[in-house]
Amino acid sequence: MKLLVPIKRVIDYNVKVRVKGDGSDVDLANVKMGINPFCEIAVEEAVRLREQGIAQEVVVVTLGPEAAAEQLRHALALGADRALHYVTDERLQPLAVARALARVCESEQPDLVLLGKQSIDSDNGQVPAMLGTLLEWPVALYASALKPEGGELLVTREVDGGLETVALGLPAVVSVDLRLNEPRFASLPNIMKAKRKPLESQPLATLGAGAGSAIVPLGVTPPPQRSGGVLVGSVDELLVKLKQEAKVIS
Image (spheres, one colour):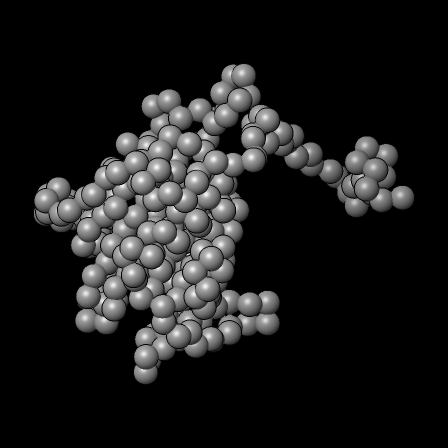
């Protein structure tokens, strides 16, 4: 089995996001970047499948600026075998990403595509479903457990009523959720080995998928500051404040 794992470069989840002074975009100057956490979970699951002898090769791919090679090297240090980097400085919308990844799948011919369920910067969560639709492959979203069995892939996912297990024929597209696993730390020896693993870089335009978008961000604003809480001395005082100040009850 050959696995393809798309990853995305995002602001590190531990960093407080800042907005530029003119409100045009998020400020990325001197900000620590990392792999999208859900993508890192997908990499970990792919590596585990290879370690179990279920998969023979794990390929990671990203669409992004030159600096995104750092995140690909990190994925290689986590255990991926090789990396593909399609370089672009454009702000890609989900459909453009899905179209580009579909072209990558046509050339790489993976048996399974593992993606994070969403990225923590845009939170769209649309690429996995779009990719599966473009490829006409079966899709399972928000996977919390994977188990290959008898030529199929059993995927357990959380739904409103509890847990649902579906069987997918391969090739397939699966997006992963937080409870699937806990990613490992990259050891220093593996970081050094990752420098020698193949990383192929070429312009995104070589895919011929068309990266243009009709969506143009008009501005970015930070969330409003929350006001401090107020201590009340009694239930009657609370009711007065809810009626007269907050006006949430009548």
